[in-house]
Image: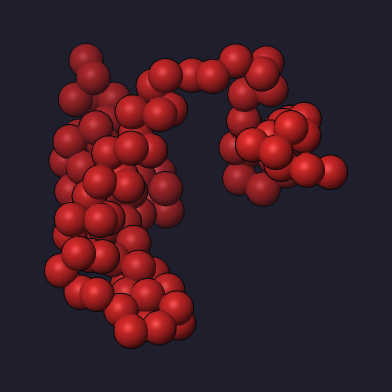
Length: 104
């Protein structure tokens, strides 16, 4: 089937079995999803791609993978109460508790 940009129907996803992640299946575009994705894309471009131009696709993939790993494991995110995404996802007792305290 052709992708949506070529006139195909968009694929819809239900609940994922892995990690209990749920993806919206109502077919509506969520503007907040776009905000987060565009912010991530901008950070990736200005902090990784523009500063370290790659000579090949494999070099670009390696550099982007390193940036994403660093962003998830070392960089605190304000939306997560100053925790890293890895702390929140892989250490639920510490990550979620501090998020609840920050939200209260």
